[in-house]
Amino acid sequence: MNQITNYLQEQFSAMIELTEKIINVDSPSNDIAGIQKVTDILSAKMREIGMQTRQRDSGKQGMALIGELPGEEGLQPVILLGHMDTVFPKGTVEQRPFKLEKDRMTGPGIFDMKPGLVIGLFAIQALVKLKLNRRPVKMIVVSDEEKLHMDSNTYNIIAKECQGGAYGFNLEGTKDDPSHVGTHNRGGMIVDVTVHGRAAHSGAEPEKGRSAIIELAHQIIKLSALSDLQAGVHVNCGVINGGTSENIIPDRATTSLGVRFKTNQQRAQLLERIKSIAATPTVSDTTTTVKVRTKIDSMEDTPAVNKLFAELNQVAQQVGYGKLRAVGGGGASDAGIMVARNVPTIDALGVVGDDAHSEKEHASAKSLLTRSSLIANFIAQKG
Image 1 (tube, rainbow, N blue to C red):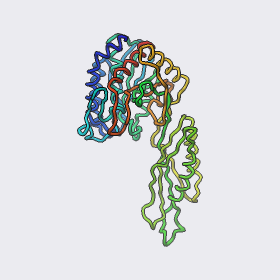
Image 2 (image 1 turned 30 degrees about the vertical axis):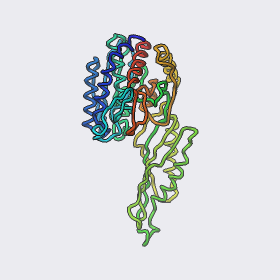
Image 3 (image 1 turned 45 degrees about the vertical axis):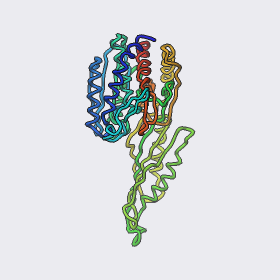
Image 4 (image 1 turned 180 degrees about the vertical axis):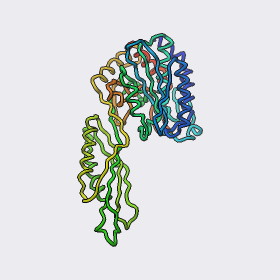
């Protein structure tokens, strides 16, 4: 057992205390007051460690908290990334506050992903207290990840703040297996496709109308056919709206597409194909607009990401954590934003748990210690 692990074991009760404090604040993405309370708690901890803090307005959904620890001049920073918002409405904490029973922690956001922020902060604290930090560290905490950064500038804030980073760790949780860390994830985007037709009385003069719904129906068949699950591509027409009355030819109809892709090149190709379908109507005299409402870059397992994983795996075994396994999934992650900016990143370095977004959500208290120790040891060794 090394000095970092020894130090963090001494801090374990403080880790639990900070976890309880931020879990017991309701902070759904649209609750600015709750988001600010969590921000204040995290900012105070950052300043206690010796970090400089600032907040960046991200628009409708709140802010991004940036904490920076200085290091040796000329070294690129390590980037730690996470989010403070949850999917649970205001009042959830009153119903089921933080609870610890043996190793099992429960409460809203206990897996996704507030304890990951505690893991990152105590990893930094260990480096500072033991005088092992050479490289600067920047921690980016956003407030609307659960809303996919819709109606905000968060995507651009992450992209700008991570620029020039040496490498990064995203502090999302990992599902029930402490050996798992993330090296790849699909990206996603929400695309609104809106057809404009011509209204007319469906009984008296239907020939004057141009049905936006019929045109959209043709397009939905073509859009759905873009899916290729073997290639990691899926286009889901998840929401449809259109028409105002049964006796009016509808002049407007919309579908919102949930699009998933394995590579950012696929995203570009998909968007071009969606626009092409929109530009070639089946119902004459209809037009279609395409708008990307929000997007998350895919996290691709680039050579740099694979190299970072190999180095982390080596450190994990050296310090007694055990052998790691590189995994990925279909869900989008903010880690993709960093990888797309040439910052090699490992995802899912937060708590070990399961059942995100549900009342059964839980996480291992022990993983606060083991994951924080792994991150701190890696930064201390790699610099």
